[in-house]
Length: 290
Ligand code: NDP
Image (tube, rainbow, N blue to C red; front, side, top):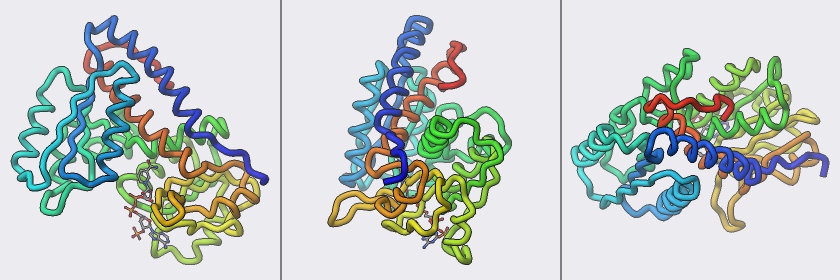
C-alpha cells in the first residue's frame, strides 16, 4: 500500500485532549461548564447511536450535556417551543437537533429557529452566510473536521487543486467554502458533473461526500493525491466509504479510512464549536487554532 493512513481517531482524540484542557480553563473563568443541548425526536436507531456518542463525548470533555428525547409524533410547534427554551437558557451554549427528523416535521424551520450564536452545527442560514462571507460564525462540524485533517496532513493548502464530490448543505458546500478560505482552487462536483473521473484526476485534494459506496475508484486519482472520505454507507460488509479504499490506497499519498477517519473528527468539532460558543458568550479568551 502506497498511501499514508490519516488516523482520524487519533487526531480526534488529541483534539479532545486540547479541548478538555480549555474547558477546565473556561470553568475556572466563567464558573460554569460549557453546555450542549442535544434533541432527539423519534427512535431512529442510527440517530440514537449518534446522540449517545455525542453525550458521552460531552461528559468526557467536562462539559454539561442536556439531552431531550421526544416521541416521533411530536408536533412542529412543540419542537420549536423546546428550541426557543434552549435558545433562552443561559446554561446552554450549543443547540443540536439530531437530523433526520421523523416525517411530518420541517427540518428547515428547525435549523432556522436555532439561535445563530448557539448553532454549533452551523446550519442556520445566518451561519451559512457568515461562512461564505468569511465572517466569524459556526461552520458545520464534519466539514470543519475534514479541513483540520487536511491541514494536519498537508500543512499550508494554498494553491492546491481541491475537488469536492457532493454539494449538500451539510457537507459538500461548506467543505468547499472552508477550502476556499484555505486558498485552494475548488471544484464542486455532483450528480450532473460530466466525466467525473477526469475532474477528480485533476485534484491534489479529493473530498468525497456522496453516499454511494466505493464510488471513487483508484484510477480516478492523481498519484499522490490526499483523499478525505466522508461517506458512511452501511451494508452487508459493515461500514464502507464513498471511496474504494483498497484501490485508492495504492495511488493516493494519504487517505482517511472508514470507519476511523472523518467520523471521530465530527464529534470532536462539535465539542470545539460548543467550547468556542461558550467562550464567545462569556467573553473568555480561547485558542483560535482549536
Ligand atoms: P446528500 O445525499 O445530501 O448529498 C449527496 C451529494 O452527492 C449530492 O450533492 C449529489 O449530487 C451527489 N451525488 C450523488 N450521486 C452522485 C454520483 N453518482 N456522482 C456524483 N455525485 C453524486 O449526502 P450528504 O452530503 O449528507 O452525505 C454524504 C455522505 O457523507 C453520506 O454517506 C453520509 O452518510 C456521509 N456523512 C458522514 C458524516 C461523518 O461524520 N463522517 C456526516 C455527514 C454525512 P446532486 O446534488 O446532484 O444530487
